[in-house]
Length: 286
Ligand SMILES: C[S@@+](CC[C@H](N)C(=O)[O-])C[C@H]1O[C@@H](n2cnc3c(N)ncnc32)[C@H](O)[C@@H]1O
Image 1 (tube, helix red, strand yellow):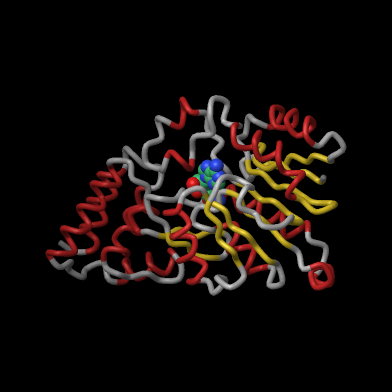
Image 2 (cartoon, rainbow, N blue to C red):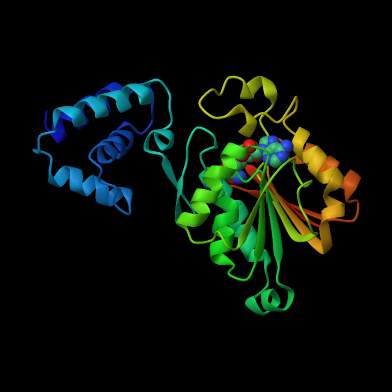
């Protein structure tokens, strides 16, 4: 079977289950052929430039298996074991949530909120990323804020293993302290900024999402169990003029504002929308 034939068959069989059958087939075939170019476009160009090349039998079998798994609902990122986030590439496995493009908003807003490099030098800013998963938020911030000290916390030891591997890959392992435990509890010191993309899907809905780890999705009955608990204790872990950045579900803005007002009655609260125009991020200026 040639590359062209393999792609055509895969695209046809993926048409019913994904909005992007071409993209999924191209990424999975590039992965099968061990073509891991810097960007997807380059991978696609390679495939189409070699469309008459014949696949080896082992490659054919591997590709068919990946397409079957994709048809079964497994996200492409779990199959190819990596995902781009912001300007970096992260390793992922079944122990972590795949980083979402919506979460890039959180990173952008944290970077915008830090006035200038002089401020950093004078104050050596500290950030705690709670529920770090594969480390996408903590590592991207470490890359963009060379002087920041970052704590990355997760309750899952397996997720922390992935985060540590990603920190090493991006040469940020010396700037990040990885801590295993519940929410803010493992933090040894107060910090300037808390970031969190904790599980926020209501339990009933999370149960139906079986291709990601439940520990990364299930936020309790209304989805806000973890943010409730984090906000209740956050004042003890923040330095004066601290800031909190929380990713939320699009319909949780009003509920979370009520929780924030209970624990931080004086705080300024901003809700930011993602590229789809949905409420996605809460910024609390304490
Ligand atoms: C929605 S995922 C987010 C992962 C990553 N930060 C991101 O933006 O893609 C939530 C993460 O929170 C972790 N988590 C769940 N409960 C936690 C808790 N009580 N304390 C710390 N981390 C927790 C999960 O293991 C998971 O890695």
